[in-house]
Image 1 (cartoon, rainbow, N blue to C red):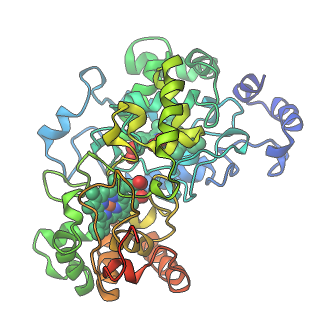
Image 2: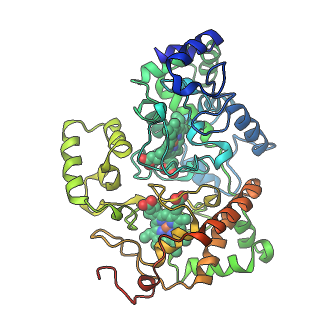
Image 3: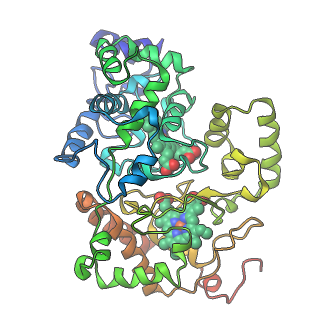
Length: 434
Ligand code: HEC
Ligand code: HEC
């Protein structure tokens, strides 16, 4: 029922639908049209689209993005989905279209919101019916350069990633790809747009393809650190310059977060247990349950549901490979624009970048599968500030205002609360297993 109502779009249909879904109706008499009013805390899509147009003003969206080797870029784009204006335009429309959700309140842009660093600034995401998942929404900014998608890498490409949330029951909630396609295909504008983009009628795989083509335009790699590395010494503060030395030395960050011209996003694309999920230690039991659940159904959708709806989420990469060495392992995230995408880590449990540094400083959280690269760092308080200052130089200049505001907000929050700080552990006055 609800998908028809949402697809209808006329005021009367929306009002009737609203009455049935009282929870979503507090915002406006005309019904919760996410294009005009906020749903699930996201900015109205009209506001987001206006901001996006400004962010991308004057940029050639089809050419390889600035800051990326064009050969590398080309190699990462599937042959059957080369970018065209028609594909990007279709993908943009779909990214902001809540009809792709069963109750018409959730689009990609709800959880990957232009005004919130293309994420949702929540610990874990909220989908249809206000249901909460188990994982934190990563940004879609620069996701095109990741070698796998999702915290556990369960999708190989943006194309494969985009079609999963639409049919996940607690995200967008359509029962099947066919149902989702029907919800948009009734709109004649789409028929023409799919024809122009792929020469065919609307279908589920092309929904994923076009959204991926759009996401490849979300490249934001023009940050103060880039200018510093090109030789402009004053592009970043003295504190951030010390942070860069720590990042590559005493802090050991660069071993998993390589940051150079060949790899500008700060992810090695590999999976590491840095001890975040170890706080809920039940790996053995959880692994047994997950393996038996997957013995019954081992599809991409089944893994998606385990990752987003159950305690098995904490198993990380293990859910995909069933390899014991991957227990609690998550793909190294990009560090680009991290300043504007709090909270942090796969479960969104760290509100500030100070918390992230405190976590690394004490050597993560002890568990049998902790990555060998994680150990106590003995960073001093000024060194922690330097690393945090460095993190904030990775935000693209187009978000400079938000970045400055976020730095102030996080600094104030960290002044009051540092729940992950443990000086005894970070200086080895106490050891993890004591
Ligand atoms: C209800 C909120 C929600 C909606 C709706 C949603 N996402 Fe996400 N997205 C998430 C969460 C949470 C994750 C991380 C899940 C995981 O790793 O298991 C994620 C992961 C991703 C990633 C992987 C990025 C990375 O760093 O690995 C991409 C890309 C992405 N989403 C794009 C989309 C697109 C495109 C849509 C629309 C078709 C969409 N999302 C809809 C919450 C959402
Ligand atoms: C052994 C590999 C490894 C090392 C060393 C490492 N990281 Fe990470 N980093 C990761 C992984 C994996 C995650 C995600 C972990 C999770 O969510 O469970 C992560 C997450 C982060 C995040 C959160 C990003 C987000 O969007 O949530 C930041 C910031 C970060 N690391 C910065 C650093 C800094 C600074 C250092 C050095 C002090 C460092 N990392 C050292 C692998 C590593």
